[in-house]
Length: 429
Image (cartoon, rainbow, N blue to C red; front, top):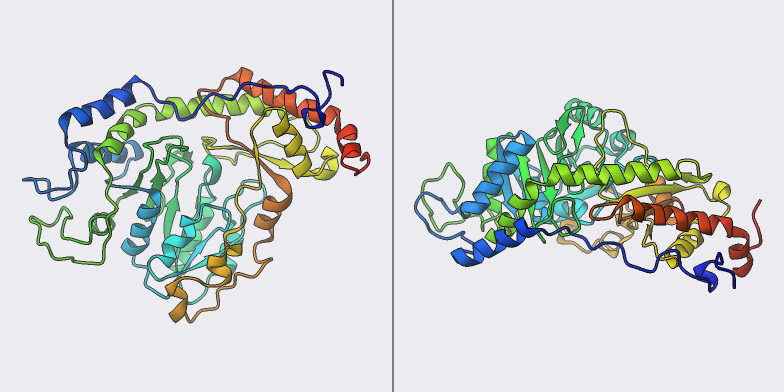
């Protein structure tokens, strides 16, 4: 066995050590958590003069700092972005039985947040190069029950907001931005999450800005902010316009409250977000320069006016030009010690939740939403045939780590004929 033989075929790996661990936790984060423990107030949604049950000192400080960072008037902290999306659907006035247009190529809660309020997700296809929702597909999906659109700024790049905002104005629809994967990313000089009626961010531990779990909603609309404050805290009268707790639920609400631990971590991470995003961009640029000349691989397409923050690094595979099936290519690269994934998520409508309509919202729905295979062919092809994702293009990884990714890809492509022969597929021209 030669030293250049593929690891998948018994040769040595390009890389034997794991990639640097993520998330990046420094002394600032450690001290922030210790300070909360020393103070002894961990949740802080309790009675306290002047706080109106809006959370503790750090939660409110984190909200103020996040609003200032995004240039919005209001920020409302939650225990997850899923909770924030649910609250957003309630706050913008979507009614049970109405429809919300979403992409199928996203995390489940982008769509399930509508079901959580008795509304129905309708799926619109995505762009094959940027993976964000396609405005033309959105327009075709609009019907008499449509009330809102939730574009996702997927993998760290903006959805086509100019076109979507124009469409929303023409059709009298509301936009909720899902910016879970794009904190502090910009679109034509404006921060994502600030272009629609409201925007939602995720702080789950894999995100660019992480608190373990957690989320934030931002808006310039006081009414939206106050409804969200109600929704996150059992629906009780806790919004800023109320002066005392009534112990009477004004609306249906849940316990979606952030803790002081998460807020403390968030404040520490928020101070670093620009630095961390820049580090991702440097690594992505390095990887793109090394892979741009590889036939059959398309590096990320960054649309004009977009500031991509690379939650993950996506590659498009042209199987014919590459000379290998995508899944076999990915399997061989992974065997060389490089973690990567294929296809991101299966389009959401393939889930039994939609195929079998397993939510109470469907029982009284009178619309015509379809979840049939083929309704979003671009998303389906991305999942089954063309998309590869590299998650470790992020600090604390280095350019040397990126070089190992390139070495592994180069090794696999040099040995494609041996790989195909071993799998009984024959060499490709």
